[in-house]
Image 1: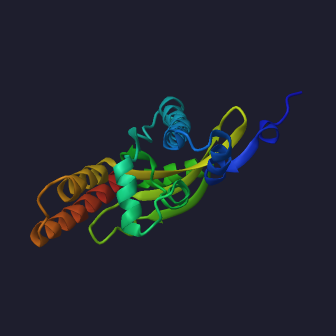
Image 2: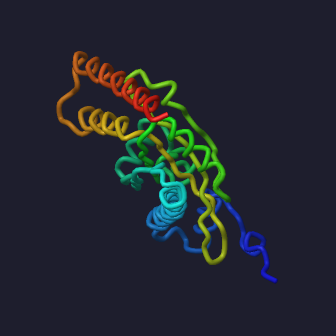
Length: 220
């Protein structure tokens, strides 16, 4: 009879793994090791989401998930965010306070599918929701809409299981188009967005929201 793997392996939080690792390896290549663990967490979660996508496509003939994007935050972006928020520039502070180092974005077609996907993620064995923000029913002042989750994903190594925080964003294709455009205009452009353009972006976000709602009703 096989033993429970969770009992054989030590289960630790990411911040505690870091302390353990520093004692053994004397802090060599710490950043590379941390980023590798975040990459493992992304792959673990992406695999589970892809299984959900395939299940609904094959078994129910329904495209619940259109596509999935993943990313690891760049070192300069991490440092800039920590500096802006007033955190001490240490690995421990980074792990405890920067929740979007590893990111998974799930794009669906219909607004009500966002909440179906959220509930399915909650039911995935071993995945725990730590925080969530509903920007779908309560958009930001900028007009931004999406559903955000901070989940803890188990990464199984040879000697222990590490729980790693991953940010999950769930949004429709229309929401994703608007968010990508806004991000490009506000953060990737050398020019500052003026008040007139900001108001236009908010108006377009409202149009996108109405369109999503009408398409959802038509589909139902």
